[in-house]
Image (cartoon, rainbow, N blue to C red):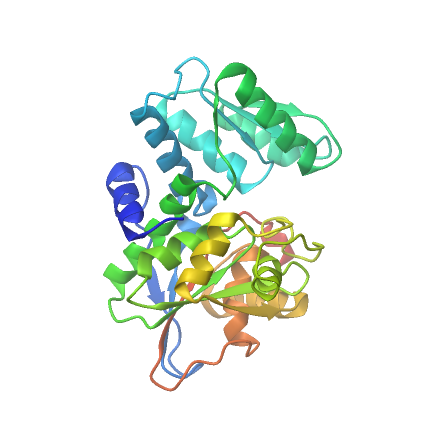
Length: 310
């Protein structure tokens, strides 16, 4: 569980290391009320995840857990791997990243270019996760989870408190959900000031299923956003914060996500990955309909995508 105090502490800890990403207003004739884009795709490594990675590593250093010669370990060939490798490099410690054998060569090359040691093995993410946990136990490396650790989620939540400073009277924040780290951080950060609506692909409804079941449950995962919203279950932290804060979940289809991503490019020349476009799809597809005077912010959380697919 995380609260606003954890987010504030993360903001102080990571000050000067993360980018304060801008907000921009959407065209006023498209939706009722006002819509703002929080442009977190402009963050280091192209996603919000650098915030949580820096907070996790710095907090571990403060507690004396971080060994300079051993560093950190993470299981992810995607955005979490890139973010943690970047954070480790910025803080001058080694990073070991475990990825499945089938991880795309371009992502492996990116990780190596940042300076990470990449270990490939196993057919699926689960095998990489198990290997990373074993590595942490054997070496004393600090394990950095992709989303379900308090410091990871709290770091992500600094997006929310930045947003409140930039749009103080925001009513609603739309945020895409995979494992739920960003949603948890943002919901805790804006708790008492704005409501959060979680937007999920219908083909990967982790929070939606958890809320229906009353606990996190495994779901089948597929679809265009599975590369970034591909967790098989929402994290315990994400679920607990969602219940506490009354986070609502809405679902969007692959077609909705593709259309929203194209609209962001066509209307604003914004390039984002499908997972980030999911949040905007809630508006463009009518999964969430704001009231006439409602002020809505859409967190565009990542841009690690191939522009040629637009």
